Length: 362
Image 1: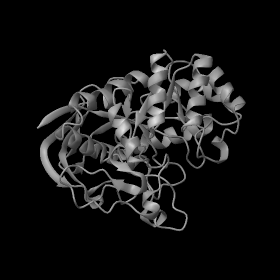
Image 2 (image 1 turned 90 degrees about the vertical axis):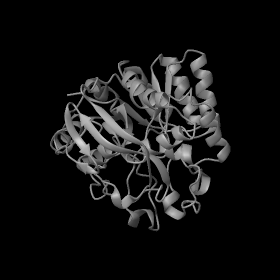
Image 3 (image 1 turned 60 degrees about the horizontal axis):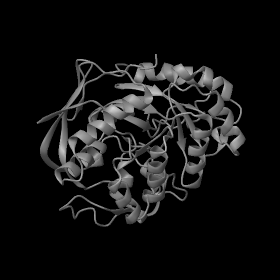
Image 4 (image 1 turned 60 degrees about the vertical axis):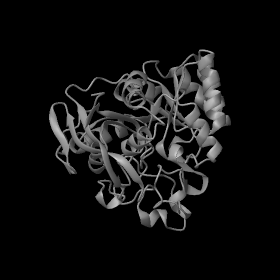
């Protein structure tokens, strides 16, 4: 049995408001605790999006009654709200800018709209961007132009990690995160499975392989592993959709991930690809530093590092009811979670009640 600090996931979608048939603050934070995650930062691209005082206040009121683990809520950058979201910065996890793959009220069609957000957002927390390849390069350039910290969400490509490496070497205030599915799955849903695992060799197909950023080539995956020192955080981009949606005619992109993060990383530790210290650095120390998050007193996770088992969605707590890692053989099971001195999870059972979670920006 090993004892770890409670993990922080800086990138989750809890689907509230607007899509609670596939997740909400209750089930999402229950899933977090079952995965050893004691603090989550929730994304703003909901329906309606969280992008002004009214929508932020409404979702925080809901979270106060539902969240089982600690949390903070992002606020979204829109084409006309730069001044208002800057005034709300102290209440938000950070600012999220969608520069690729989004529509509606958070769409930023040209860089003059980016500029106002970079000009006005305070330095206390970073601007977090969904930006890929060339748009990522443009976002890093703008961060340098305005001398603002920027955090690149879910990098997936060799060119991205190498560009961030070069930017860091030149003193640009850039940090980044990587998701487990971009470390363990390749283009087409091909699993780069743990040693000895043959039950998941078929990979994913159709809508179940849809995610943004898309799964990349094995060469891209290898480059991410080779440059782990450049990557600041592990983040799940927990993005639950129901199987009916994923198997439908127009499947939405996204994977659930809160309950599979730690088992996958611990399995990589058992294979010598990762260390426990790296997990703590990228899932606790760095997220806390980058996002200016408070310590969680008397908070820890107990793990049976020798437990071997198969990942099964039927045993999970997410409302979406599936996982891209179904049947994967992993090593390392979360057995107990203590949050702020209270037993929050033990042996498969969620013990923290809805509303026990604390808004860390409250």
